[in-house]
Length: 440
Image 1 (cartoon, one colour):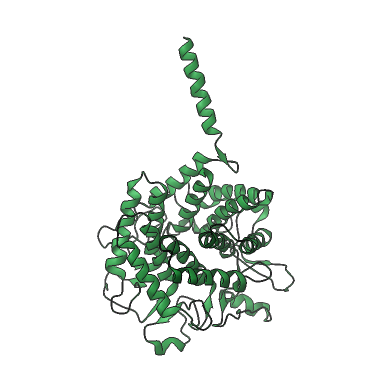
Image 2: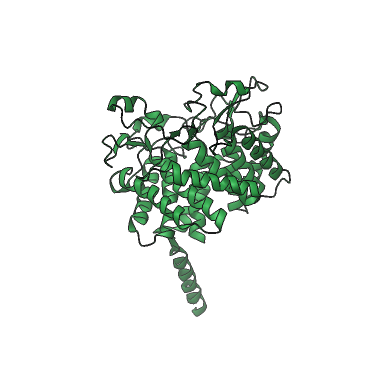
């Protein structure tokens, strides 16, 4: 009898001890469960065994849509997420198999052998069709994915593909005069000076925030597997350009810049003009707080630990979003804002709450608590965002995320669960990173 009693006591003690494993007030097992649930929705469901690569479109109930044409960004993000999952949860071979599947399609089907770079779009009915332009933004995601996949050591040629991609990006889009990269590139160099607006990226002579931060992201991961002198030089250039030029004095990022890094600003224009042309000048709270993480990650990769100037700027980006972009009690992060009066008073001009921005904010807040443990706002916002995601973003009926939080966009609950611009990457990264933070 005494043995049984002691067994029960030990069992209860072990269970209680396990339940006490928390991170910033959350049960670590709940974080792991959320990460696994997320990944298991996508893999192997995402795998297209007929046409190769990953499916693009799913309806709100996860039924595959009729149109399954593939865009490079979506394919690369699917590969990166699977590879990251394989490197995070090493005992689950399903993630590695999904990564191998995506890698095969990317390198055997999407590479443009004639002109270089990966094809931006792949149409099922026109598999051999080539376009005369490409986006460096999309190819940066390909590099990002290839570098992460190379970490799995599943394919010895993966690193060579990453090197090949980096060399192509650098050869066609790097600005030798002013540094940084152009996004919209034409294979016919004579067309480079046109003003075509492709996917809203605008003037090909401009440089933009979104492309730049994701080049930084890609180069950070690439340098981790290929610590080459030139890669280090380019990574450090991007870190300094984003940190010291693209981040404004108020702690936010501008969206577009001229080739010599003059910010495109409409602040001296009328309110109506600003609203009508907000695609080219607004405050994107999600990108601001995401960039805080990307800057820290790049600095740590370059120098072994985050440097003080980068940490200061990352904090400014995060604090700007905390002050101006979050809903009451940090219950969700709004999409866009603008300082119409140029006095530091930011007005919300788009109150939707993108699913990806909620997750990027959530994991960045967790990261900031590591560097600023005495700042209670970060931990408080972290918990509030966890509650917001679970209450307003996750679909309790079919699983997965809505495109926007249903509190400010209730009509979107019937939208597709996956499409060209919505895959497993943002939320997958956030969940895996927070799980890693909690277990370190």
